[in-house]
Image 1 (tube, one colour):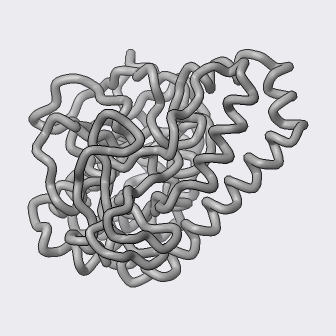
Image 2 (tube, rainbow, N blue to C red):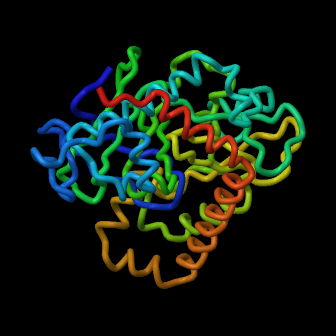
Length: 322
């Protein structure tokens, strides 16, 4: 199901990397191409023989490809079909190196809701589950353009936005484009797709004036997490272990400061506070945490290179330019 607009959530949702969430999306006009390059004219016909996913991968990513009219919507449709196919054919998950039986859901030890727990001892960089996109998939290729609308896919069971259960795919293939997956926690839990139930080590701060609280959060979420998000170029977001995890231990990851829209809005609105955060020890700690996360993600993608390549092929298979 496709809609021409999306509701701007109060929270931007967890990110795969430490970056600010995209600004609210304008929805007064249908999806269109980026300002650059220009829309194709009579002499700029779309290439024949290759679908939109093939063209994106061939160009080296969405920021390097020429976006023709409708390409953004085609990419969203392809990602949605790709993720839906994986849910419908879970026997395929082992080929993406996902061990469905490695984790289970259960009452969380860090919050009042559910969490994800290891069913056996896990080694670093094991892919244990995927992040489901059971509610919505959205993409805005021109992320730096506040007036650019997003293309959105919504499931047949869609009722309302679930901003607290959202994840951005931070793969370099998508560049600065906002590829956002949103799960519906009210749907039945499916093994292999428990990513939306993985909790942060502690609640992200929401008060931008409380720098000490933000520093405590950064230290805890950097040192006490044991898993991380692995963004595949196909749009899949996998959850992999960052260190050894014992059977029965709860999986915890960092959702970063961008999880709280109030916190990010407060930081961005106050120049003096933003400078303070970027010129003291807090900035150093943020850099260390960011580098650590980047290193973990890079190593996981290297270890699971075959699965990553296969995911690209799967996206190409379901992409359609018609």
